[in-house]
Structures are given as C-alpha cells and as structure tokens.
Image (tube, rainbow, N blue to C red; front, side, top):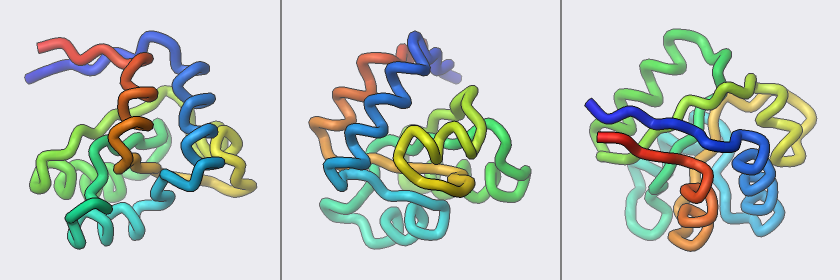
Amino acid sequence: MSETVITDEKKLLSALGLCARARKITIGVPMICEALKRGGEALPRLVFEASDTSENTHKRISDRCGYYNVRQIRLKADGMELALAIGKASFVAAVALADERFCTLAEKYIRFDG
C-alpha cells in the first residue's frame, strides 16, 4: 500500500485557496460524491479530507474514492483550517480537485511513496 506524505501543508492549503478562488474546487462530501458519480470532466482527481472528520465520513469518502480510483489525501489540518484556507466560514470535511493543472499545483507539496 502506498503512503502519502505532505511535504509542506501550509503551502498546500494556500494552493487549495488559489483553486477555490479560481472556482476549480468541489467543496463538501455530498458534492464530491455526486461529482464522482457523475464522472466525465467533473470527476475529481484528488480528494483532500480534514483530519477531524467522523469515522462514517472518512469511510464514505474512502469507499467512494476507492471505487472510482481517485487519490484521497488526509490532511493534518482540521475542518476549520481547511475552511479558512478556501475562504469559508464554517467546517469543511473535504474538498476535491478535478482540473489537471490545479492537481499538478497541489501535487508539488505531496509525495506519493510506493
């Protein structure tokens, strides 16, 4: 099983904020699950999950990402830190990126081992 290491989480959160300002991000578990189901260009390529999601939410995201073969990354940041990074005022459990260029931007701060 491969391990994901975030090399600079602060810069990664900043990159997610840029993605949000460009409106190239899907916010929230229900919206991410719908985008996964819909597929096509809307299919997320990376899903970022906050560290403090419930077990049920984590399982829901993990199962969907596994089924659709989408990379899932659990952040050290909690839901409020993730929300603030993308310009939201309340808890955000997960965000997803579908745009290839913005995925490349985010992957600069992630190392996939294995």
